[in-house]
Image (cartoon, rainbow, N blue to C red; front, side, top):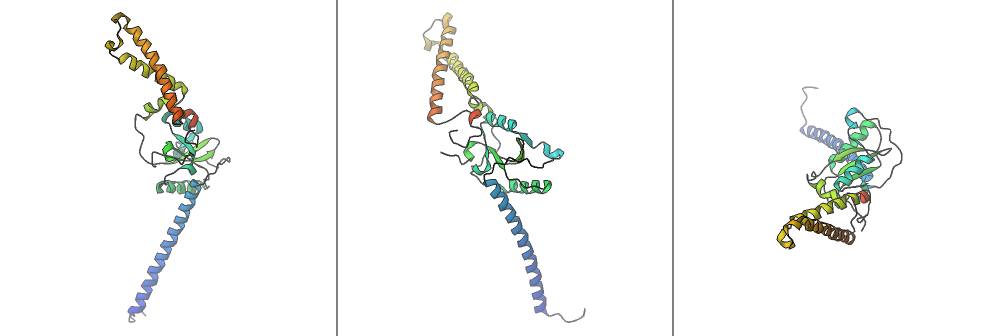
Length: 240
């Protein structure tokens, strides 16, 4: 009855059961979420090269996050980055990236099995760590969807510093320009040349500096096993 006396013990037990039920429900939800997170991390850390195309029909907002292999290749060469399987990634995947994988899969109704990372080679476990990586999902037909980007942005001058190392055809002009700068910045008193012959001496010095610097940088590249970005942008070897 509504006016019956209240048994405090029974009321306390009932409240305890209610609180326990809420806690168990929360723990169940958290456990499901944790299991899903672990599954995503497992798929990211597990190497799998997929050849199948995903049934992906992007909406207008997601189309801007789809990039071709040629787009990725150009960026990797330009900024001296690597494009490798996510299984090579040495650092932890941030939770925000995992959440975006969940949201993407729920939105389009399929699982992603093949993940890639675009980042400097220092964040990868290369055969022989948290710097501006991009997590991409392979969609098939050389198309990739950008899931998440984290870490610090690259410095504005990285493009300039990495330009000589893009390929052999950017290396030689860069070294030649460096030789010209050195040759034309030397004081004329050091050259023991008459003023009317100065330009010829400077050109002669620039050519010889170019030859010397080319040999020096080639030696350094061989000694430290470094290669041009056009060659190693997809290499999983440290000296690729």
